[in-house]
Amino acid sequence: LLPIGSACEIMYYNNDSSNRKKNNSNSSPEDYDQKAKEEQQKQHWAFKLFIEHPELYLPFLELGKEKAVKEVESLCKIFDEYKMPKDSKILDLSCGIGRHSIPLAKRGYKVIGYNISSLYLQKAREWARREGLINSNDRDNESDNIIIKFYQGDLKDAANILSSNAQTDFDAI
Image (cartoon, rainbow, N blue to C red; front, side, top):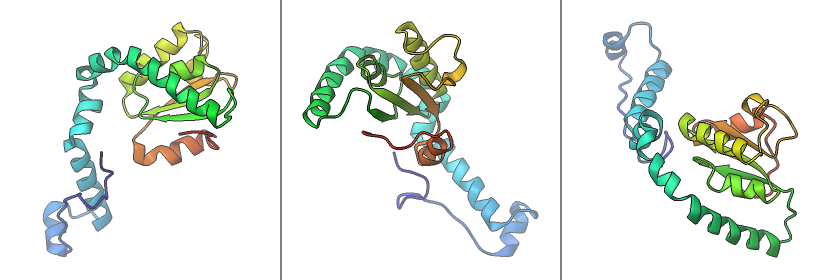
C-alpha cells in the first residue's frame, strides 16, 4: 500500500484561477487538492477491497488463523530471546480479524490492534470476547484493565489516532 502523497501518486492540479472557477467558484486550491486525494483514495484497490468489500477477503483471513498461531509461537520465541516480559505492549498494525493479536493477548501480552476495516475489527472484537479477553460489558474496549484493544483508521493516521487514545510507548510493533 502506498500512502496518499507518495511519489507514485498521480494527481493533476492546475493553478489557473479560471480553472478553479469552472470546478467550483468557492473552492480554494487546498480544497481541490483534498477532494482529489479523497477521490484517488476511493479508487485505490485497497480502499475498494478493505472498505467497500471486506467480505471478499474475509474467508482468506479466517483460513489463516491456524497458521497465525504458529507464527505467534515464533514471535514469542523471539520475544523471549530478547527478554521481553509477558505484559509488554505490542502494536499490531493492519491486524485484520486479530489472527496475531488475540493469540498474543492470550499469552499475556498487552495488544493494540489497528485496522482500516470496521468489519475485520468487529470480527476481532467478537473473537476476543469469546476468548474472554474483552468483557462483554465493555463497550468498544473502554475499560483500562483490558489486555487487548482495537482501533480503526487508515495507516497514515495511526500515530494521531493512537496517541489521541493514549496508546503510545509500544515495546514491539
